[in-house]
Every structure is written in structure tokens, then in C-alpha cells.
Image (cartoon, rainbow, N blue to C red; front, side, top):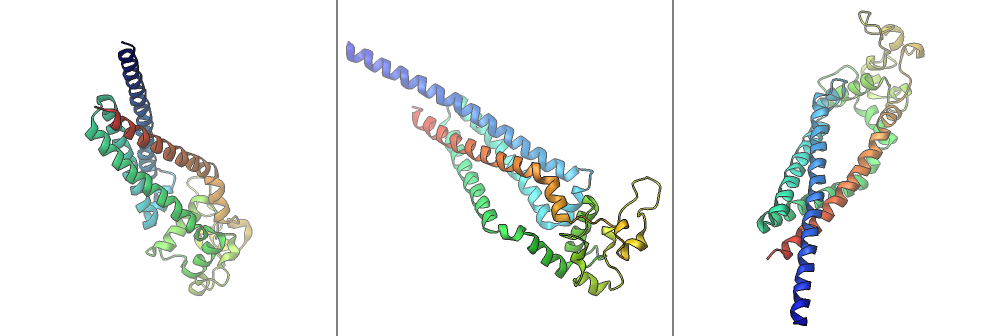
Length: 258
């Protein structure tokens, strides 16, 4: 009798534990579902953003590809969250195993991307961008992807060069345009609608500091995205943690289902 009661009590505890894991997994997968929705929203926002970021993305094949990667990842997380919720509530072993394998692949891919970003972080330095600007920037050839991207950045962020307008000294731009001190994209624009586009195009091209943007684009872009960089980093850590716990709960629930 005592043995039967102990066995029943153990079975009841196992059932309670399995039920707890099931609902915890549902919560984690719901968070993954929300994370996927957020990534989808970010990707769509970048593609339709009217403030100029869309032009930068469209001009740079790497960024253009990155936006669609974000959309694909968001869509996959959205689907995974949905499958995980269904698998947990219905206690379907096939759905749970499918969910586990897919989220493991995504987790490893995100981890590999983070490692690659750390390894190639030297390509995001001021020195690297300055060297590339001096070597490849042409000024007015908008059919060149590199040049059109830099023009879009300087127009969008009201900046000039990587560090300052002096970056164009001794550059490929000066070889192609020996009469201009800075490119047109560095010139200050008129803020009043209906006026001419630039305050003084001629004075700007001669290098007059009053009519050109003097802040470097590296500082301008970092200042603009500084808050978003920390938010993105924190979000990435949270997403990886949620995915890890979701995999653990999925496997526990998979093994617990009879």
C-alpha cells in the first residue's frame, strides 16, 4: 500500500513537472514569436523608411542583403515561435523535435555570425574606412556603388569624410576632381523649402568652412546609432538566452511525453 502511494505520488509529481515545463516552454516560445515579429517589423521599416536610410540600403548590396536576412530570420523565428507554442500545448513529439532541430540551427548560425563579427571588427575602424574612402570614392559617379553609398551617407547625416573634410586630401576624388576641395555631398543644404538646394555651392566646393559640413561621418553615424547599438546588443543576448532555454524545455518535454 505504502509502495503504491509513493508510486502514485511520484507519478503525480512527474505530471506536475511536465505540466510546468509545458507552460514554461509556451511562454518562451511566445517570446520567440514576439522577437520574430520585432525583426520583421525592423526589416519592413528599413525598406519603407522615408528619412533616407532606404537609399543607403538600396545603394549598398551588402546592406541590402542584410535587410533581407533580417526579414528571413524574423520570419523563421515567427514560425518557430508558433510551432513551439503548438507543440507544447498539444504535446506533439514530431512538432517538438522539428522545433528543436530548427532552433538549434538558428542558434548556431547566430553564434557563428557573432564570432565572425568579432573576428572582423578591425574592418569597422576609422582607419579602415578612411583608407577605403581615399582609394575608391569618386565624387559624382553615382553608378559606382561605393560612391553613391557614401554620397547617401553624407547627405543623410550632414557630414563630410570619415573624420573630417580633410580626408579628401590626396584621395582618388582629388585626382578625378582637382578643382574641388570637397565633393558636393559635403555642402550644407538650405533648410527652407523652395530655396536653392545649397547655401553656396561654389564656396563650398572651394573649401569654405562656413558652407560645408565639417563633422566626420564616423562620429555622426556612431552618435546617431549609439543607443540603438546597445539596444541591439542587449536584444541579441536576450534572444540567444531565450532560444537556449527553449531548446532545453523542448527536449525535456519531448522526453517526458509518453
